[in-house]
Length: 184
Image (tube, rainbow, N blue to C red; front, side):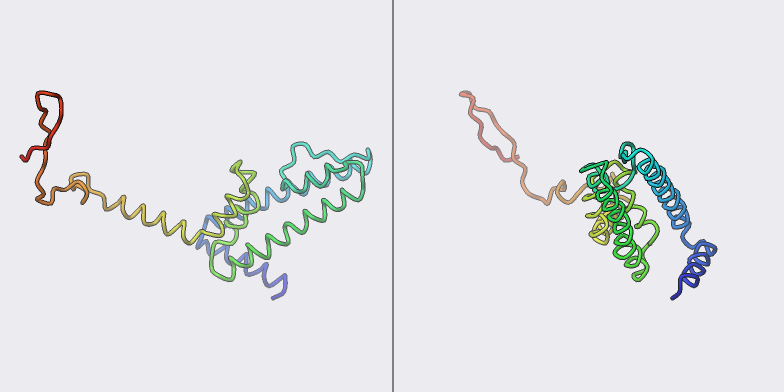
């Protein structure tokens, strides 16, 4: 499929509005990506002028800043960091976006969560990755919790709380302070 055909297909999907959260995820993803690329462009122009690449207040992946800060004055590390940044988004496209598109998952939502989730949610990327990988099991578990919550009746005791016609025992205290069970 050509780039123009895939772009037309995406636009048609957004216009049908079957999944409005996908449109919102696409808009948020593009805003954050444009912000990242714009800030990197400004920092790169500053690097050309000053000879130093500043990594403070960047919303890029952590490995990018780690590569650059090995030597902020070296062209080799700046180019290596930018190359790693591009490879990161190529891998996100290949392993998240395309996988979700082929399997019918919410592709823009998962791409947004995996690419920007650690920065947005202030959490470790490993948690986002684990959520992405184990999403069928996590959502199946959440669905079961919701179903059990809907079926819960506070007037109905749990099976564990019901008396199955077993004899109750009470505790009787003797004169010496010892206890012994007594049948009720």
